[in-house]
Length: 291
Image (cartoon, rainbow, N blue to C red; front, side, top):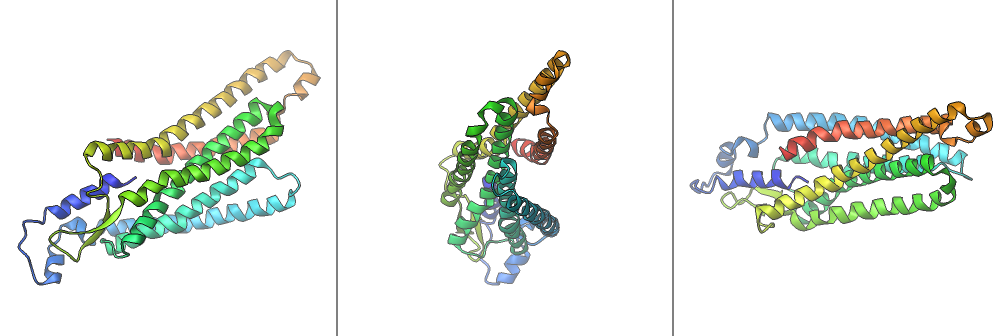
């Protein structure tokens, strides 16, 4: 996901090629470009990620505990939406305890000091939780689509739920695996003690690099957003249509409209809020990245 940023960092390293070879390592470090030294931007990153990590850990662990307790009370017939929200909380916790500490540690050291194997492993988990979170949101929207618009297919929803969740985890693994192939540790060509976890010298051309970046943006943001918008737009349109049509119906017909139940409307509101937050949080980043 951050291959372009990584390549820009290496480009700054290459700008030092014309420097004379120095024997004083601390002197070289003092004269490194600002983005190759610990600076105010790194301090800001550490502060923001630390606050987000604490908030996310408290919030997601609380949600997970509440969902587990609720699942134990309804062990005979557990709610599908609760199961999916549990997987969503787990995906967010993976981001919280794997990606965020990585970003904090990397910002503190600036260069990469954990070796090549850890570089590849951590770059895998850097995107895995993000992919999984997006895919779980897609599963939730599809589940709501079938639950509200096709209530007669409830018998098949439980099996579909399991298949979707398995597909979400497998899809997140497959989409994240290329990270382990393209990211690696390279030393600066002139400052041999300065290492970075980068994608430099992997892509044969800029077009290949751009293609990989666009693939990540489509799979993590654009495609999930389209599926989510289609699912909830269809639900809202159907609810509006049937609500209007029910005005002249008898009480039996009205009572047979399960999508108007308070539980489903409450669940629908909750999932729409989740989708709205997904859109608000991800869209600015994706727009800036494309620009």
